[in-house]
Length: 399
Image 1 (spheres, helix red, strand yellow):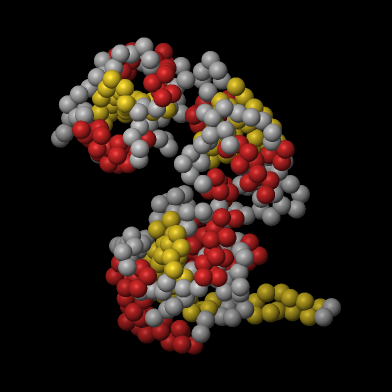
Image 2 (cartoon, rainbow, N blue to C red):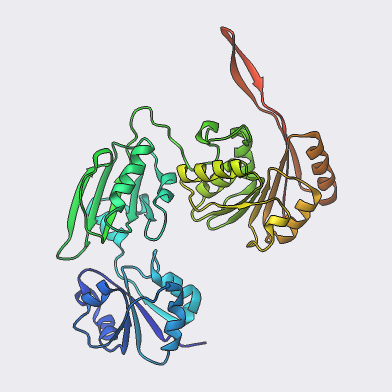
């Protein structure tokens, strides 16, 4: 087994004083230290060669390998494996080459300052990511700890909270946690006005205003949550579809016939870091899907112009496939071949022609056929009656 040759050390605002004697010795004996300007300022008394993060950061593993044989230390903030550069380096080099030395994370510091149980809070980041990604976590009483990008982050988070009916929420920004310059800023999302330093962590306690539309991450958002042209997988069918697809953390969904994006968006909301690629030939529907993704907190939805099977050439293999439009045996054959082992495939049909395709496929490949019929109460003059939606034939199978 390869002996570890790289030390990735978490450091806090208290610099070397916050490290154990053994870890201090590693830093002091290093020949070259990688880190940000802030990390170098925290250890300026150490006389070692200094190197800052390469641009792009993807070049970092290669840079480290070029220095293999020297005493190398990489400095990161807090826990090297919690939304940190240490994770990316570890994926590239392999954990067998690395010794990690964790320090208290910003999440732990912030939870302690707020008096919150860390186990009961959502830990999120908008550092290097679209701030809209926090939207699915808004819920009455939810507590969010958020790693910020820079001084603009609190205003962005406050605006998103207010736009989604959480204007009364308590927002706290704490800068330089654990250091001599630690400063706290408290306010309400709807009228946030503080100017904060770049380096800080946010704590948001969600309070819904009266009449707010509460959208949980459980599949089955109301149909009016989506802008659409009528081409929408309806709420009840969508919830059943997502149950069969089974969203998992980091899982990739192919949504064939994306439409307004309802299934792909709910897949991404339902599990952390879930990804989705939507295939849609119509420009107007691609525009609707993009707008819905931004509004509902899945800005990373990837939308591809075209039709299957041609448009899926070269895509990463999926963990699940939903065929909501453009169903054909050729589309199924291609998707099934590329679907990962243990992956799930779900196809919905509303036309007689599509039903005929599903029946042939089910006969050839097995799986489960379910006919979904939904009636909704509607006004009939001064009274009420049942208004049926178009029935859906759903076929699902696992690889």
